Length: 284
Image (cartoon, rainbow, N blue to C red; front, side, top):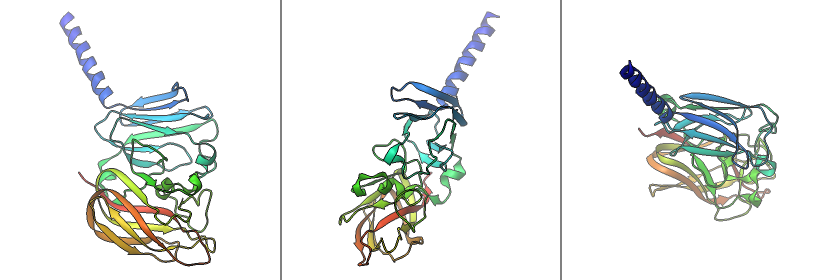
């Protein structure tokens, strides 16, 4: 009996360790890193947080599974994101004031919030898709991808941040607050924007949504696409708020950059980018 009991305890211990190695967790923490709400599971979890968010609050996601691709929905007002998280942790800051302007006005508001997280399926990971899309991208350093950065954001304001170009919003006939958030460059002549995928992917097409709030805006008539493999492609663009697709031979890359913007002479003086989509597949 003692041997059987000992074997049962060992088996339970091994099972517990296995579960810990595959565990995913969502926590809401305050500015002092005190956990307010928490839930853990294996493949799919949903946390209902029943408090108003306060300045300094953050949502922390932990993933100890072998699959580094996650589908996360940080707020009821936002769409879900398929992200790549090479490490085990992700910290998402709750946004306030100017940083929250690019989001729907009800985002992060109220006393009831549903936060969801699940392991992505192979069909989701390896299907042909827009690899740049990530509504939960935030400015600054990151531990998850895709991630957008730029060497200029007009007035350093959230409504003109680089992350706005990969948030899925494609309304182009306005500027400023949601849903017209964009990447604005002021009049900087050497502006650049880069999308970092955090791993190697294979791509063959991009789509550009130029801001078209005429006559406030002008547009770029040409630009250069630079790839992490050292290749480049010059592209012509037109005065339009519709998606402009630029195709090229398949490339295996870790990042893509837009630069050398050539502005058109128009009554409007501002040119901006609403959305940048990059199509391709993850590499097995």
